[in-house]
Image (tube, rainbow, N blue to C red; front, side, top):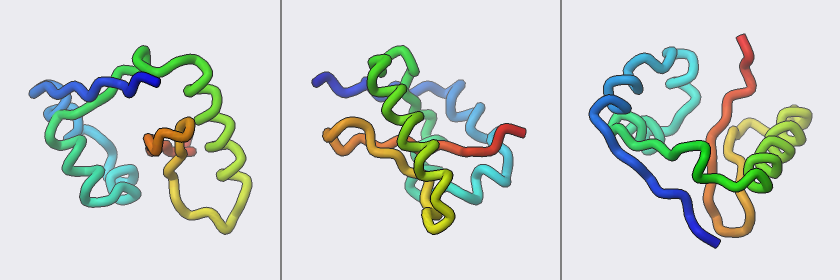
Length: 88
């Protein structure tokens, strides 16, 4: 299975500064540094199956009040994605 390519641009580093403070507060120091360094992964680099599986896991976790984390494991390759369940 091919891992998504991590890209880095100055524009992405600048855009990370626009992430709302309420979202930044939910991220770890490592996640913030990753974003502030301008790193990102294009959605197109994930297969449809991986995206659907991630969404399904995120929905299941959001329905469990004892789950406080926002990490969803994709496949069995130990790749993780952070999500926010706020839609407004």
